[in-house]
Amino acid sequence: MRITIGRLAEITKVPASAIRYWERHGLLPAPEREGGQRRYPPEAAERITVLRKYQQAGLSLVEIREFQRDQPRREAMIRAKITELQQRMIDLDHAHQLLTHALNCSEEDIVSCPKFRQQMAAWQTPDPAPL
Image 1 (tube, rainbow, N blue to C red):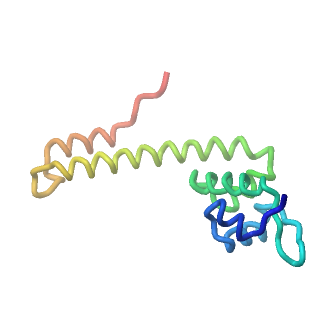
Image 2 (cartoon, rainbow, N blue to C red):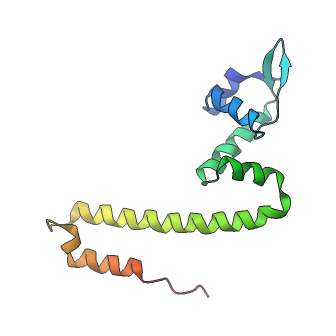
Image 3 (tube, rainbow, N blue to C red):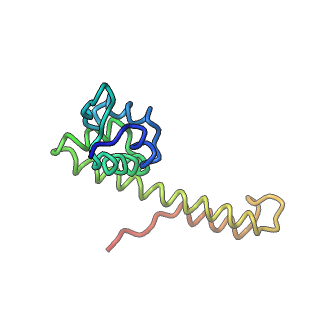
């Protein structure tokens, strides 16, 4: 059973305009048409879920297109994206530590707090290489 773009947007919580945009840029296969209306197979919702996860992982639309098409470059792109995500996770952890400390710190200026300065020094020390 084929579904309309409106229903697909409702199911995936992605605006119809984004679905049309992804179609135009080759990220979604062109749907069949019935009476001029787009009709999608149910698996289109799964494809959209994957596209959203790619975006949440930080892939640009160009990278997503390459990921879907260019098999030889896929592994290198995945490795680079994993490295980027690992750095983002470290950065987010540091931001979390900063905010948590700031919430509980009695110093007027957090930068003058000895405990926070110690934490900042630890951020600048590279982690030991994995075994």
